[in-house]
Amino acid sequence: MDTIETIHEALVQHGPHNDRIYLMRLNDADPYRLIPTLEDLARQKGYGKIFAKIPAPAWQPFQAAGYVQEAIIPDFFFGRLDALFIAKYTSSEREDIRQAESVDTCLERVETVSEFPGRTVDALIGALTICVPADAEEMGAIYRHMFKSYPFPIQDATYLKRTMSAGTTYFGIRARGRLVSLAAAEIDRHHQTVEMTDFATLPEWRRKGMAGYLLSHMEGYSCQLRIKTAYSIARAESEGMNRVFIKNGYRYAGFLKRNTQIGGRITSMIVWYRRLGRQAG
Image (cartoon, rainbow, N blue to C red; front, side, top):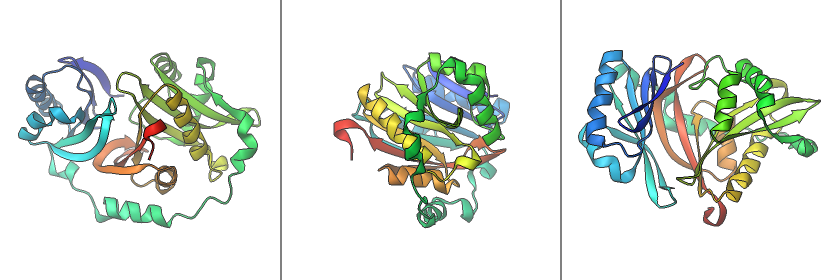
């Protein structure tokens, strides 16, 4: 899997798996010092994209270095600073996408997805669970079954346990004594945000509203922690998952071209966000 390390105080993921550099957290890094270091790394390793999530006040040096904005979430950090999702492509092949992969085409497909036949998950309300380290092996087996590849090693039980201890809360639904659906709330208490991610439902349990059910409960859990903004980065081609966010009041924030390795190939992603608590809407 790709490496996660600190470079000039910034948290960065990079490697051939996603064929990119991902600036995950700028922290207190000096952009003028960090930017050339990232670009040198991209040249040395031959990565096709540098991708970053930054607070809006840090935008100017990145813009001067040739980065473009792909998405924006208003009032993201602390409920008052916009978050910019920005990119710089080192190859035209990585930047180019087919019409079938464009945001307009993907959103049009989402709007045509039929309604779920019924929220049969309601019969399983008592089976909602917050996962614990003892569940990690079973969780990893579900993720291995559902994803040929993924940007982070969620198929590995050791990784799941480590992220649990670092503050990620995994929610699951049990049926007939086993986990059948999972999702994660990656909570950043400092910035008062939560990423809703790692959704997976076993094939025989799909189209029962489980993802939406988990999402709703993760929002309630996050509100109790005074989190102000929820967001997610979903596969553009996943009509069902994108529809879940639309139906749950999430707003479109932008389109990340050929950004992430999922299911054996680099795919484009859609960013969604929603205000929580008193700021919801």
